[in-house]
Length: 76
Image 1 (cartoon, rainbow, N blue to C red):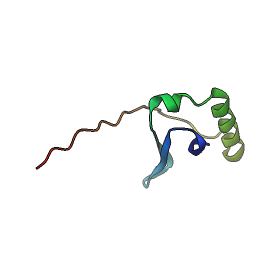
Image 2: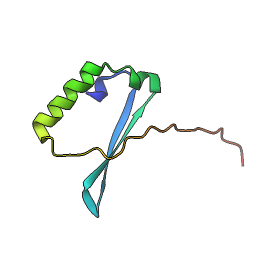
Image 3: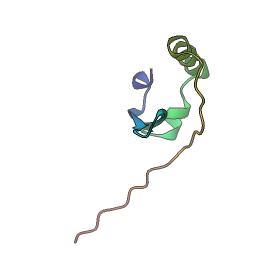
Image 4: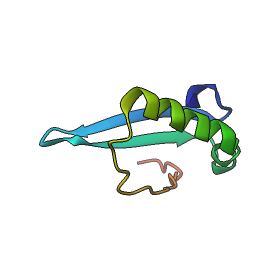
């Protein structure tokens, strides 16, 4: 679903080898505005589909938002 949204760049799934039940998702967007523009109904529909396929036996521990800072390259 995310790949069809304007501004979506990529999604990574990180799994800790020592704790395979813990999953970290890294989702990149062109802008925060494009991420926040996804209609709530679309997010809820995707959540329902996820729960139908995988069940409700999971817990989101934390959600965070980060910004990538880019610095100009200086000649060596």
